[in-house]
Length: 146
Image (cartoon, rainbow, N blue to C red; front, side):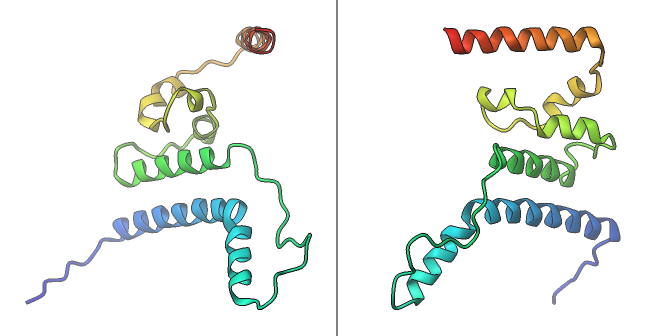
């Protein structure tokens, strides 16, 4: 005898948001990075003659850090779905998390739960901004000169 459980509306809604997020993120990644490759492979497989030189299907520049943004956003969506973290209502904190490039060179994708407290306790001031610009310029000079 098969017992079927009826899923609650909350679970169905959470799954829809997760799959929508995954579909969107992977779709954008596929469109920018792999679309031409697969289309080129498909046409060369089924055409009897090679396509003319200089053709292109979709000539577009890939945004810098696209894979990083994609996997960072997917990590957040999966954590929210698994209830590891609560969804953040503050869009600025979410965007800061997604675009936090310094951790990219430090290692793998950072989970939102690890830097959540740092993002929520940030303080914005002109003094802090000036210190940040000064620190950035010093670091850039060291990178370029040394």
